[in-house]
Length: 219
Image (cartoon, rainbow, N blue to C red; front, top):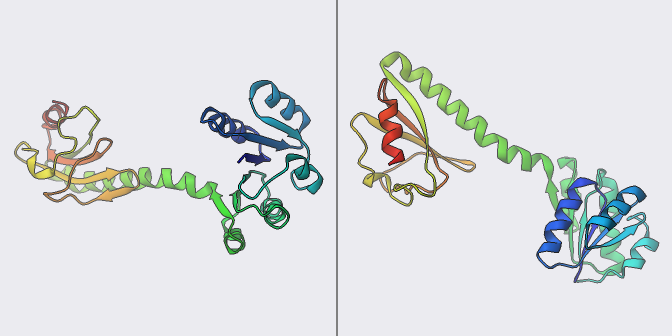
């Protein structure tokens, strides 16, 4: 089995480098001669300077049904054409393609072509930050005029509270955990909610006790 990466510039380089390090047989196909020359000097992969949408170029690679084809061109139409080409002529079962426009997802899905949506990947990392900031700002506005404040506390791998349920934290008086941000989730904590390394706690406490709270969680 080999992994054939078609198109793209810098993304395929780092993808190929990682795959090679894990022991996979990697092929890289690109029309850019200068890019191919550069990759041939720095990657332990088979570099093919040619058009990935050309059957003549693909014939040189001797693609088989068990190979994995990764399509990284910037045009969905071209990615779809190549995907169908390798499915029809070489019986390839596993095709992964960059999806530049999410509106085109249905046609790829219809033919069993897996899609990698760049916008979704970016938003999955941005949305938790936006949501967390919104939650914190709303809590701050609600509590600041009432003698309270909001503190954000991170639970790292070395914390004694990692893997403990909320009910066992023995929090200082007048301290409340209002929420937990965990990756792309906002969790409403309960007594049996277990803290995980990497969690960000949204903590409400009396104004002036912020350092006490931070000290408590850093023990």
